[in-house]
Image 1 (cartoon, rainbow, N blue to C red):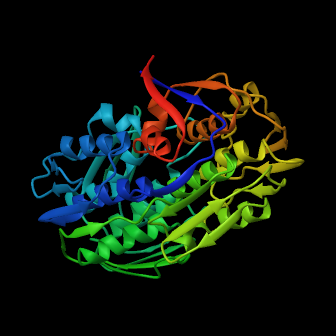
Image 2: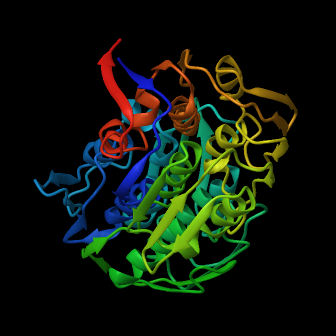
Image 3: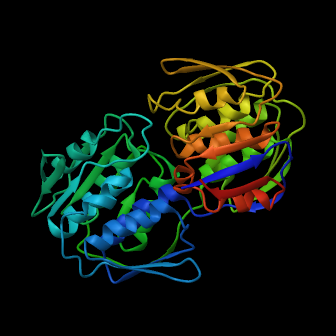
Length: 418
C-alpha cells in the first residue's frame, strides 16, 4: 500500500501528454475476443484496470503479450471457456463487458456480478434486456449472470437510459449476430464511438457512430487489427484543472478539444484562460476562480468523471457554487475529505453547495475511489502545507504515473509506502 505526500503551493508549468483512454481501452480489450487472428493495441496505458481485464480474458483462454513499447497483443483464437474467472472479474465493473463477445463467439457466457468503485448503483438490467432482445436466455443464479444463445439474431433494442456499458455490450454481441440490430437511445460518449470504430476496423458494419441511434449489421467473422485507442479526455480534464487550481500555465497535448467542450466552457466561465489548438489545450489562471454552477449529464453534457475534480477547484472560488450530480447517487464521497482540508461544502441528496474559501490546508486524507482521488490530489497541490493521501491504489486504476508527471511540471509530490 502506497501513499502520496504532496507539498502544495507551487504553480504547475510546462507540457504534458495524455495517455490512451482507460474507458476506451477496456471495452476494446473485451472486443478483441470477437476477432480471428492477433489484435495489437498501440501505447496501451499501464493501469491496474488494464491488467485486471487482461487477466479476465487470459482466464478465458486468450493469449496476451505486453510489448516493451507499450503495445498489447491479444490472440483470442483459442478461447476455451465461457466462464470468466471469479477473482479478477469481481474487481472492476468493466469485466462485465466480456459477456457480449462471449455470447457472440461461444453462444454462452457466465460471470460473477461485477464490482468497481462504490460511487453508486450501476445496475446491469439494461445489458440483460439487450442480450434478451437478441435472443439470449439470461438468468441470475447465486451471484452469477448466465446467458445462452446458440444463435443471436438482430433486433431493435431501446435503452431506457443511455448507458455506456449497455451500449457497448449490446453492440459487441450484435457485431456477429444474424441480421441488423438498431440500438436506440445509445450512449454518445467518445469511448463508445471508439469501440465502434475498432469493430469496423476488424470488418464490422456499424453506422450512426456518435449518435443516439446505432445500426449494427451483423457479419460472419471479424479479424484482428492494429489499432490506436483515442486519448483520455478525463485525464486531460484532470490535468487542465491541475493547472488552473495551482495558478499555473500548462499545455495539455494529444487531446481532442471537441471532446472537452463542457469542461472548457465551465473553466472559462470561472475565469480560466484557455487556448485550443488542433490537438492541444493550453490552460493558465491567475487569482481565485469565479463561482459556477454545474450539472453532470451523459455526454455531451458535463462528465460525472470530472465532477470531483471541478469541485476541488470551486472550493477555492470567490463565492458560492452549486454542483448537481445526476449520474451516480453516491458520488460525493470526496466531500468529507475536502472539508478536512478546509473546504466548505454541504450536500443534500444530489446537490452540493460549495462556499469558496481563500485557502485550503494540507492534512491527511483517504482516497475512496478513482476520481475522488484525483480531486484530493488537486486540492493538495493548491493547499498550504503538506498533505498525505492514503489509498493510492484507487488512483492507480485510472492515472499512469501521476506523481512523476506532475513532478515534471513542478509539483512537490512523491510516493512512499504506507
